[in-house]
Image 1 (cartoon, helix red, strand yellow):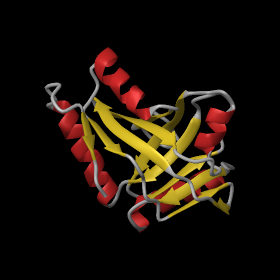
Image 2: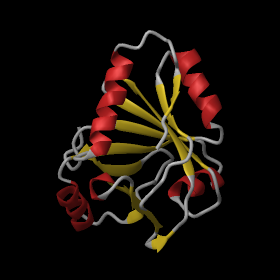
Image 3: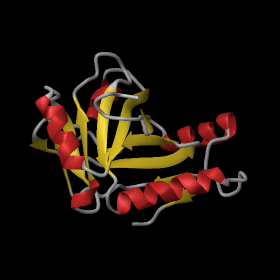
Length: 176
């Protein structure tokens, strides 16, 4: 438990081959089902304070209460994901903390000296997220994510699907 952010709710892995990564998690670890969004539509996205036209795919599954997120950048637009891959890394890139009081946690982190690496919004104002520039070691970026809106409802759906998963239909495309 972080005294600043609370409990880790998601581990985020940046990968070069998201389809292969999903198959690995299903076959080698029995984790699924995966909810796969081939082209994520952001309302806006900024990398180090500058607008960026990032394109990415994501896949989500749970193992218990911990959500696993796979992210594959689909273009060379600036992002912390692209920086991670360009540095020769692949795998765990961030730990995420979810909140229903996003602005308060965002302001608290900035007040403590955290700096934004990239941030954006998906699905309206209650879909904000921020990644703080905390990577002193691969896998140590901190993300905060607003779950007070539709994203929180979707994340709960992913968790419930995993809890009763029998191995059928391991990859489930999400159309948006």
